Length: 407
Image (cartoon, rainbow, N blue to C red; front, side, top):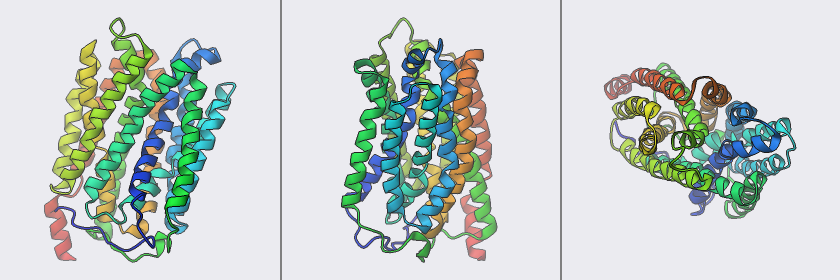
């Protein structure tokens, strides 16, 4: 059952051409900001007097905790108050938070600023993505391009943070994107008109309306799958820089070169989201989702044992399938949930998923310090096995057809 067309109920008086590029750029910024700390952690640890980067890593966990906990209230406000207003708070909030992080004089001040940054970063996914999709006629492709932009933000974090740390210092790695976000907020305010009504007052229905019991089952599956996907995402994106540095020791030592290699991995792997987005519009969702999740398992096992340039190849394959799994939860929301509820549903799902997966950031440093990266990657392979089991519980196309015919 392919997605047909999302309800065209208007959300703003005029849909400006600038809206989609600005929202996609906001997704890139969201992920870039969340990874500045992880990319610059070695330099910050040295500046603060820590002997090992792993000991400073737990101080960044607050950002990811708030990234999860803040999603539910952000989604609720997006539906009831307005998505445009919430996006303005997003742009200005993360910009100011980054400037506060740059002024930190110790680990606890930095932790507080990062926690605040995480709270504002939580706005984007439950608000920005539904805002982007509310007029889309090809939601899978729209999600794919949006995911590509988000992951390009991850790649940009690897490049820009590495360059700014090397040339100016770690504080500049927060200041430059902070000022850029504030500037983009001003552009967004100027180019996007006010909404004529909040989403909660709209009457558009989901592309595939489901009875309450099956909708609850789909929501449970997407939440559990999102938890496991979030764990994989946080472990990899926060740890890949140090993983490459360790496994390529003696081959590549320059931080700028390592940053470029990591950015290349993310840039190439991000293309998977566009491909997957196109496939979501054309193919049954469950078998497509399951095949991508199953592909993660052998690639993570390979990465656990790879050294030298082999780790670069294994990491490229691993990130391709991890990124490729990301569009499915948003695709399920746009397919099965009315637009008037999407920000709230996405917010609740993200609060649970990101709340649990934020523990990966807190555990990363201690786990690697105690057991090494090989153990971490094998644990991640086990998480992918759980993801596959969750996806198996998703209703198949035949069950959906029978349910819709019965109703």
